[in-house]
Image 1 (spheres, helix red, strand yellow):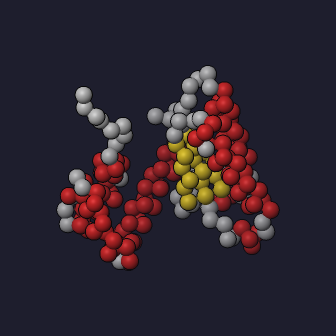
Image 2: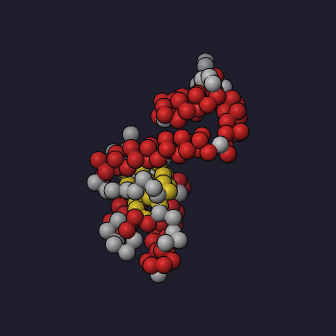
Image 3: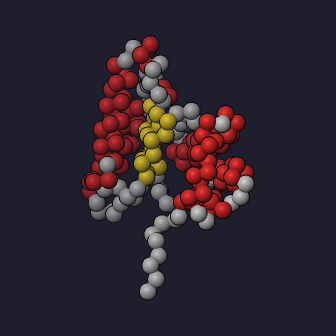
Length: 175
């Protein structure tokens, strides 16, 4: 019997899913030892206030958000702004997994935006709420949660008063 973890170690996930950031980390630390020992990332702390490092980090982050926005457009037809804060909730759809509460919070945010004056709206941080996941085909509550996410998205995404301050996307065919 061998115990095997369920999931991908963070270092492998980072190297595979975000090679630009992995390269920046390797370049900054002078080696790729961090890929085998995540404690090596502690050596990045002194760079937290380095303007050049922060600029590179931000550029990589923004580029990845642009790539994600392109994929969302391809998969759903919905344009999302790369400059927004992304609130991504992707996991098995279940009543206790908080997708429902996330939608309640999104509806509340939508209401706040709608009630705000044009001047007050300038203070809102643009946000994109992304929900994805899968559930058993006979799970009624999960189907209702998916329907809710899509219904909220249909209202929010087509409201000219809200514009890019709030977008809601359900990623279909989660895999």
